Length: 287
Image (cartoon, rainbow, N blue to C red; front, side, top):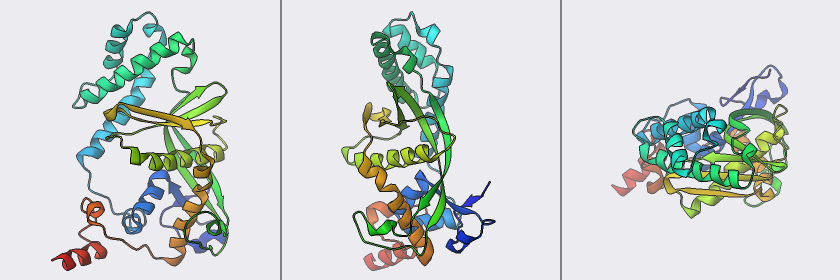
């Protein structure tokens, strides 16, 4: 199997013994958030400082994964809504995140009852629970010559490696719905961001030869802290933009330039603010 890496050199494309560029949803999001942060984190391998929000997110994600592994359809079959809620709560751990588990237990109780009424119990449990996908993706050299934004041309065609873990995939009718769990508060401005994330997952799942969950007709996201769930049909405009977004990343590798753009509200929480030239210059200017 061909290896893949973030410490990638475009000149390796003609050498089959060298690794391909690795791209994940998180790495692509980081690049688009700040090119310099991407360089620090992925190319140089500097680790950002852990924080309470990251620890909480990991705990809630792991707990929800275990919830679906442990949920027993037969045991829940004869329960009323109150007993079902207590059963769902019992599947979550006893830790510091009880409030969000209460919201998730209520959400799952209502979803179960709706499935029971509509006689679609076979679709209550996910067909995929934290599934890992890997695929090769072809990026043509003229990928930057179409679509919105500044035009760019790559030096050549590339084949890169895309990878990701999809939180959940549900079956509905003849199609499949990947669902992303998010901790934190929902805001309407996050909708465009979520569509980009889900488009990445659809491209990844479609390209993975081992993924048989096809066709993907919708995508969805769940923010339990805001008790917010949204599902919508897939959007081709977002899907078609994935290769262009990856092309921009490759273009930066070709130039070897990953510039920072300082913005105080964005940068003040960055783990790398102390070593970022852009941030230091901005602070000196303000001083």
